Image (cartoon, helix red, strand yellow):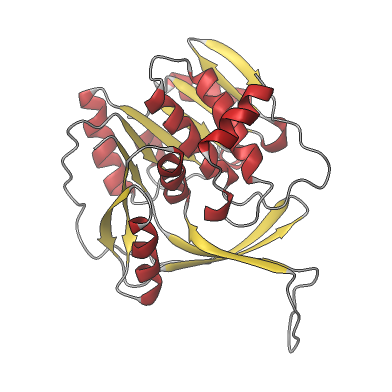
Length: 293
């Protein structure tokens, strides 16, 4: 086992339409995409598609939608460790001028205990705060063994402060900052005080801020021409998966370098529709990253 990702699986249905019908009304969409979703899930597939064998501990139900999940895992270098739920979670995603609305239906009542995995050889653990019991269990275990732990802090979840006690790299959103009533600069300082080695806040098209080796740093986003942004859904998850991939490839490098690689991956992702379909190939990411050193 080289890298382990823990999260909750969604099936994402992305619909592009000029008008969303309400009441007794019908409309025809311009385009759509269908695929897997979920923060750590998309990060895991990003890591796999870029080139690393990946282990994924996630929710699986005994229904036809989970059959699709199993089929997708078989097509990629992803080893699935299922944790049973009653039914597969579903997301309806509607992109709109670089932003998106999401309507979700999910089942987070896990029907079995935390799977006990052999983490021999593990070099990186990535979490998104779903399956918090499993997240804390494996984060604590990895901290004891000196294995790099990473967190996607998209929103403030129950027990997230406890989980942060075992996190080395925490990349959180502006929304996460707002939920703690902290500015991005205050957030990276607070995370540093919590013991996080590389705290960061993503700022969308404004880039990100982070602290490494005690130094506060700012990194701009890769500029895109007007109209190039098609769908931002999953771009943050792809960012996380890409920096984990970069870390596994060059663990001795600074995270500033890993973040530069990841911002290229997310810049490519926002120009495509859907989540899984937005994950770029390694040569694409390397080429764009080379243009924006």
